[in-house]
Every structure is written in structure tokens, then in C-alpha cells.
Image (cartoon, rainbow, N blue to C red; front, top):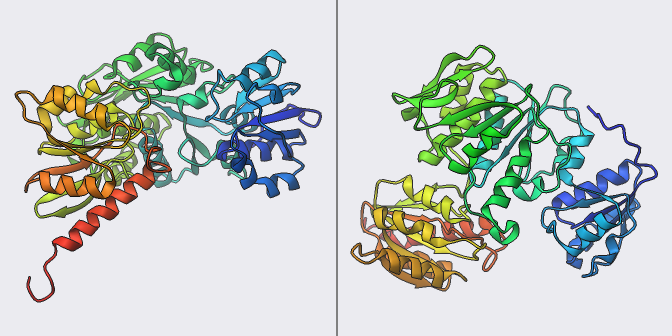
Length: 470
């Protein structure tokens, strides 16, 4: 279903940044008849899709640090990796181009309803769980956006009744104008990407843009237990549906007496949605994710029984507190997706057992002192690695007096896993939850998690006795 009425045939368009979303936006605009140019500060990125784009008539223009290549266009599509305050974006605005992102472009090109999920942590889990719930209910859907499939690709060839379930990042929200999801979900707002947004107030403001174009016919599902997310409730123009794992409320979705309850419009009638003890997902943060997904599904009209079945069957995503194996009474977990300290804190809180934590990587402007209380309470030892190893070590030293949190350092994942093995005892948990980006050592968090899992499995092989001796 296409709703766009703009005529792109005589439009000059520039796409800044040639990652997945930029490439997808360039293709979409070219197929709509626009005169499209692309540019990227990394020439290798433009070369990767050069043949296909050239076949569509797309031109490659040289990147210039002063941004002058962005002058003279009608529309400029900014990829998430390009900072909104960059010279190129400033030049585009000065030359009166309309500056949008690929998410905004996709919204203008489809009439399909959208459920959009944002937040610092948990986005991928919630959109994936929603996809599972909708599929179990027989509702065609596609999960797209920041999770990997660009929105402009996702909308191609969708069934008329399909629902788009979109993971939306703060970088994408910087460039929305008309974007209006039928249901917007705000999971949490905790310190992250401050190297880009500067302050928590600015970060909160960007997240709030998810709801900016909604009306009272739309819904805002918001975490009542997260302080900065809850503050947004007073300014959104849509119907607010809060959720909480700690507070029973007169409307929304909440936990009470070990059960998940929903009190939802239009008549705000209560519905029992499931038993907390039956969930496969571990930790309070995942219970929050379940409530958010359940709220959206129930608002869509999916029966509570179907929601419950899908939620209870869902086992989570790779590299998100993912159980790897047990070796000599120690259980190893991969939470490589934790790229900020709050995500690490949440992961540690999921365990009652003593934790040996592997942490480090590239800091994104975060303050690791957030981890001090949880280190004192639940962490037995820390293995620090990567660019931020010294910062991690300093936090451990601050947490350690009177608590005895041990510290080891590692230059590689092989060394980190070996150190964790030596520090752990039967009954402990070894948890890779870095609290940092991976780009100092890996191309992404998945590669980091895969390396961790490979090293752990190698430990398992070493720990097995030879055949005939066991």
C-alpha cells in the first residue's frame, strides 16, 4: 500500500552515508524517478553497491569535509551514522534542502500501520517478540528498522493487511518529521550515545520525537518504572498506556501477585495475561520487555491467550544474556549486546549467583560509576579488556574496598575467558556484558559475542577427560 503523493521525477536527491539504510534509500528514490546522488566519507562503502546503484542511474559524488557536496539538492537523506550536526547536514539545511532520514522516507512511502519501538535497551528483543506474537495470531507482519532490515526495503511487496514492527534508534529519530506510528513504545532512557547527543536532556528529547505526530487515536506505551521515560508521559499527545513490574495501576499492563495483568482501553477492562514464573526469559529487564510487547499486542486486539502462548515460548535473542554452556559447575552467558553500563547493570541483576564479569571495549561517553552499586552487591570478580580497561579497573577499585571484588586484565578474548575460568568457582556465573561498544576489537557486538562463545566452547573441550577416562 503506497500513500506517497509527492512527485519525485524532478527531484534532486542526495543520500549521505552508504550503509544499509542509505543504500536502500538511494534505490527507493531512484525507482521513484528522482535524480539521485550518493556520498560517504568512507569510499569503500560507496564502492560496495556501486554497480547496482549505477544501473539505476545513481551518481557517486566525492565527500568533502566542509560539506559543500550537499549544496543544491531538493531533498537530503541522512543515514543514521552521519551526525545531524555535521558540516554536510548544515550545508544541506542552509541550501534549503529538506533533510530527512530513511525511516521518514519509508513512512512517507507506505500506508501500512506501524508499531515503533525505541529505548536505550531492549528494542530488538521487543520487536522480535512482537513479531512472534503477531505471527502466532495469524497477522502478517514484518520486523524492520534498526534491527537490520531497512524500512524502505521492508515495505516492498507487503500484504495489504500487514503490520510493520519497527525498531527505531535515537539516530533515526533525529531526522523524523511526519513519522507517526499507530503504537509507539518507549522502553527506557538511560545513559548512552552521549558522545553524539551531548546531554541526557537532549537524548530524552530525541526519544520523545517518537510520539510527536501522534493524536489521541494513537497509543504511547511507556515504562512507568523508568524515571526519564515516565517523564515523557505528560507531554505526549496520544493515549498513554503505562506498564510496570512494580506498581499495580488503574490502567496499563502490570505485575501483581506473580501474574501479568492488563487494564486497557476502550473500556479499561482487566485481562489476566500470564504468569511471570512461566516466562523463559530471565531478569527484570526482560519482564519489562514482555510487558511492553504484551501491551502493544493486546491494544491491537490480539487475544490474551495467544499473547500468553507466544510470550511463554519466546527464549530471547542471540548475545542478549544468552546461555552458552556449563563447565565444571560454572554457567557462561553471552550478553555482548550490552553496549552501555545500564545494560550491563540490568544483566547482572538477572542473576542471584555470584558473577564473574567480562567488561570493556570502546566507551561511548559513558560514566561507568553507575556500575559501582551492583559490583558491590553481586559481582565476585571483573575481567577488564579493550580500550576502556583502565576506566573499568578504576570503577572496580572504587567498588572493591570492604567488598573484595577481584580484578584481572586481558588483551584478547582468549585471555579474558581464561582469566574468568580461573576466577570462577562452581555455582558462579561468567557473564560477558561489556558495557561498551565493540569497535576497538570487533566489527560489531555479534562478532564479539561469537568470539566469546567460541573461546568458551574451546574451554569445554579442554575440560572434557579423554575417551576412556571419564
